[in-house]
Length: 275
Image (cartoon, rainbow, N blue to C red; front, top):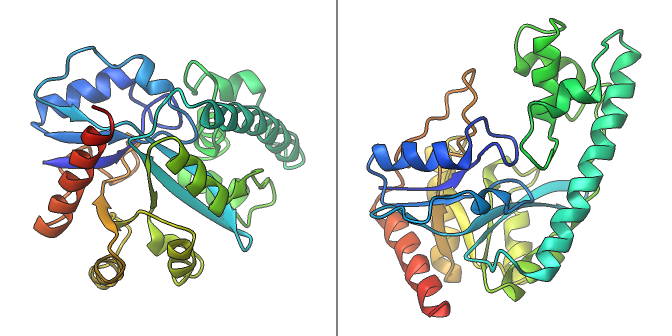
């Protein structure tokens, strides 16, 4: 039983890393990866022993390609790699600036929330993401639930949307690999153009997140076929954040035998690299 795409309070999830791991253990999961957005902070608070649960270090890094937002999962990276740590620090600062700009724009629509209103919903490092802004808007009574905050104000086409400052996808792939990790494109079914995957393969991509809750059956089969033909790892996870409004559960990702086998092969390769 696996789940290779999980988020904690270190980025935009609601569970602490300790609580997430404890819940995974109680569910009988065998192998997981915490893939918080642009940070390895969660790995500072994981219990020393999680046996029999195995945890593969992970991160979900934001990037851009042809003006599209592309998320790249990095599995098995050295979490102390200097270049990735610098990138995470840069993104942390950029996210703070972005949140401040969104707060200013929201005031134009008579939505009065403060930095403190937003930051208290973030983790210890205050890695601010849009769900934290949305949470503050719900708490203050401006919208009844977070999805409406996105739909009306801070979604990609909303009047208070502010774009993230990101590095190119090719650079992110290289940084992950230079840190000893595997670069896997996250939820490719959500890309503006799914054929971008072929461009990422030319950049040296290691794998595709084949199974994701937002992927249809046909998309899953399509990405499996691309992975097979190009010798790529296949991964899957529920993209759990712990949002009580959502339908994404902390449970086994029902990826099927072929994807499960590929994930286990990647984990074995990770262990070989780190002997």
